Length: 116
Image 1 (cartoon, rainbow, N blue to C red):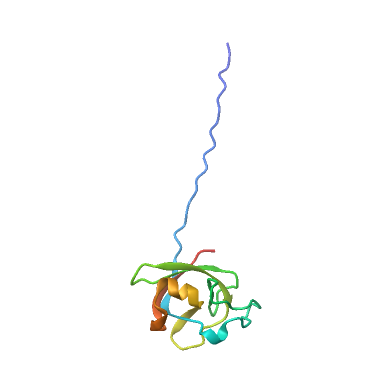
Image 2 (tube, rainbow, N blue to C red):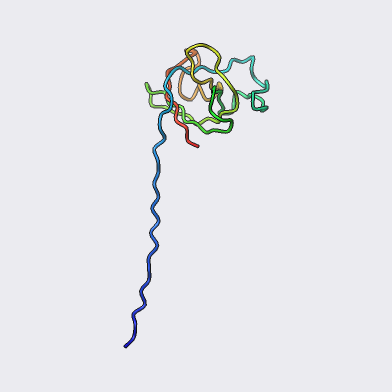
């Protein structure tokens, strides 16, 4: 009697976690006078890069910042410390802020989610 060959199928389960909103509050952006200045991480601030300052998140953290009013979001990398203005939770580069809000407003309400 011959034995039938049994193939085992490998099943890989991929679980995608939904990023959790860690903070909600006001975001501002870096003024023009900060362009090309060194950040706390040692990198130079550039308006056109999608970067941000946060008080406690590690440098290099990737963060999704969403304007809950419009649903628009932008991905930024934390490379500086701040903001130091009372009531604000994140400082965005000018280009990152412009993707989710009008720079003329100066500040907008945002939700922050850590991506990695």
